[in-house]
Image (tube, rainbow, N blue to C red; front, side):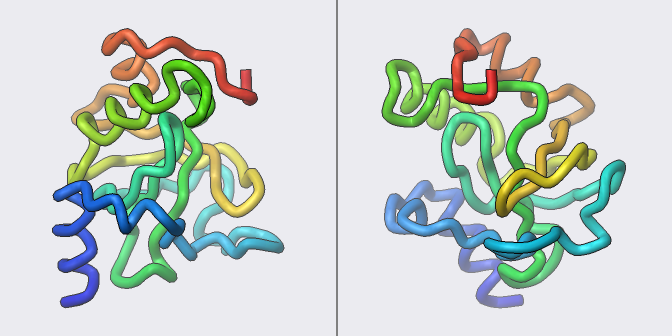
Length: 140
């Protein structure tokens, strides 16, 4: 629990060292997601990591084994190195850093799940569009 609290605090501070590696381990790098992350499952918890403008990690429990990497199913941000990509990541950080999200899983994609995530009842995809972030990633 202490390590979890420290990681949440450091992530909330935006320390760049944490961005070097994806700490989310609930979905294995190879193979199927665990049954508790099947289509329609709800994942609720604080955001502990932002990967880019449309992927983040939600702590569904203590420790990285319970941290779920989520690709937003309703928003396709520009790729991180593309024009607008860094701004999209910064906006997603500003909107979600340390906040509690509720995400409904749609499907597995690589080592993460695609889900619609809501913050205080409103989807992050809608919040990103309202913030003026253009869509244009590879998922589009």
